[in-house]
Image (cartoon, rainbow, N blue to C red; front, side, top):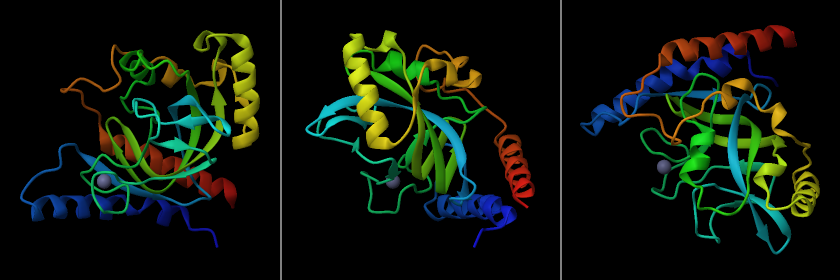
Length: 228
Ligand SMILES: [Zn+2]
């Protein structure tokens, strides 16, 4: 059965209340204002993120960026479920930084900034459009999702040491993840335009989280209307 759009988007207030109650219970405020939403499989929240393409015994595989232990955080499947490495809770959890990250329009994390932050990492980066579902925390930097599904990948020759390697990786990735691999032209303008010297926004950065959530709610309702 399909969840109704209002059920899909309506947990924001409950999530906010819960986050605040938890913060009060621990006598502290969460370090960053955030809202908890729930997106069912039928109405995912679409975002963009980066992976690094690394070699594995079974060919090229997507891996977390900014993590340099080669045995850590490889994502061999099209669907990825979040784990918390800090605590024994279900990921993502309020006030923690666990969950699968993605940027959405009007959040502040800069994907190109993360490439600058991790320029010493020699494994080529790749952009990915992802469908975020389950529990999703939204804050000014982006989202932390319970589950993401890779929808399509985007790369360019400039990100690879040579064309032969790029062609091999594109072939292996599209077969493994059952997605198309495009040029960077498919990356949306709001991702391309958010160029910063580093990935994280400045300390004093702020956004109107309620307005952002309002626009997500409207989009959910529009999707629901379209599905009727
Ligand atoms: Zn956690």
